[in-house]
Length: 466
Image 1 (cartoon, helix red, strand yellow):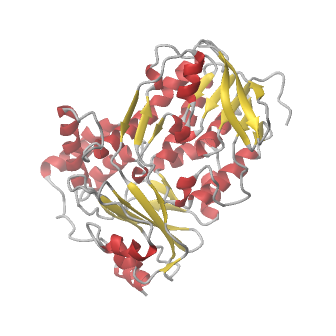
Image 2 (cartoon, rainbow, N blue to C red):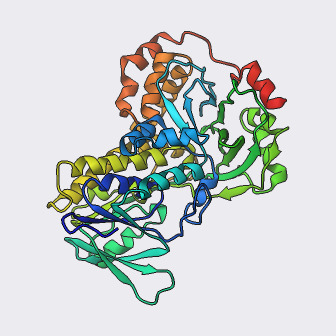
Image 3 (tube, one colour):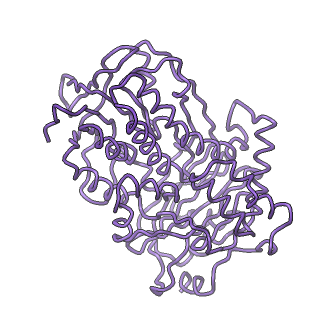
């Protein structure tokens, strides 16, 4: 594609999910150059730049809505290729951090998208890169910015093993490069102050193994099974069975400092049996493993407060994990990335990409979905010993206890569960937890007593253990 002389040019750094979402949003306003250091695979396949793809992923209903807005038909394509829109909690067996089992209410409108990350990325790439307004430059590394503290004018890149850099002039540059973003370094080179940062690291390690799903009748789709870690009982250990396409279970186990899962295949099921409830281990006893165990320790919550910068350069924006990365156990990264792209599009529908102050407005708009997910993750992870050098304030501790109470109420009452899922799915702000739908059940008590064990049906148990 040859960029149009009559349209602005935008350069997006990174062709992961965040970069693809941003590129899709930007085509309404500009010709887009997508810079990616990897050579992208054809179809669903792993790649070096997304090592976390091996672990369990889902897209919360707030992200599903954002996907439908950005890329109509994308969710349908994922489902057509084996993904599922899963009712939360109807198609989920879940134990909350406070060790309460959720009842499987069917009335909530929340549908999470469940599939392997490789499939989701493949569908995103196929749809986004089919747009003639997007030019992909693979095997190309972003190495620096051109311009000054007031305006960024170009991106310096290096193609493959080339000895010299190339300059890509742009009206707008978007850093969607993920956790490894080099924007703080580049800001220093431009004479801009470093962004304020905060890190909350519960010391979580992940271990994932893929299993062949047990044979099940077509009319008995197996639910997600999730045992969440309890911050009050360090080390915190949890796990999830994620049924995905091609008759597979992606099983991810997690543990905080002193309770981490290892990479030894022989200890994987034993670790699952040792969780707060052994249901995951019991379901895995007869399952056939498909390969070894993948591990990672890059799970800290880390946020850069770009929206608070006293000076912001025109022509430059940071999105997604490059702004904030979250403990993957909460599953919010993909949803936030899609919502950031929607925030970008919303601002640019009222302000030209080249208008004074446009980039700063985008950066402040992006902070809203980032902040919502950040507060949810940090409110739990900061409770673990050694997670942060900044202790929780009294107000934060009170809020954490209130959220525990809200979870306990939602586990047994459908209206309260709806309010809780509105917040967890990033569809509504945390104030929803103080609505009558939550407060009335909280004050008058649940309709039914707490469950004493995982609410698997007999048909599901037979299918899994057959």
